[in-house]
Length: 252
Image (cartoon, rainbow, N blue to C red; front, side):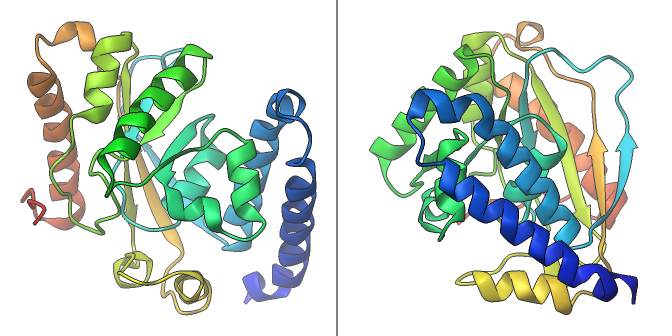
């Protein structure tokens, strides 16, 4: 009941932040990049509050978080790309459809979000260069190694994030997301704004579990394949605990 009492205020504030961020995105590139990352993080937090998420963080890590990292996460829901950057100082690698969103697309682009068209080889190649460039600027980057949003069960990890980690020496910081209301939050094909409304109004639970692990360092592995398999094993173990199913599904 409480969420619907505060919802009008949360929505008004979210709209104000969105319009302000959109207006500031028209500033010259050099000036807007200085603070647009902060605006985007704040916008993400407002989104998080608007949708009234309740988060439980499970810290499996025993070592300090690296000063710079490549965060990898399973891609369960369409909202992952939006609210994870509100929790962590990361620049996401996201599908190019987000760049076309009204108002929001300008904010994401100004904040340095890296866009990719996964169906085009040239775009995928360029996105790798863009990720490396962002890392060279000192940013942390968020990559979904499944290569897309595949829902509740893990799909085979792509090598991209691990290859970049080996090339740059920057460690992988793994996160695993689990939504208690699996059916509502699982993204399905051809769902956009209506999907967001479904998440807001039709969910049975707003609880999301975030599992964090110790970073993996590329110097500990001789090959990209060995590196990828070590990280994948951690994800399969936590998926089995959350779902009682450790099967790694292969993309068609």
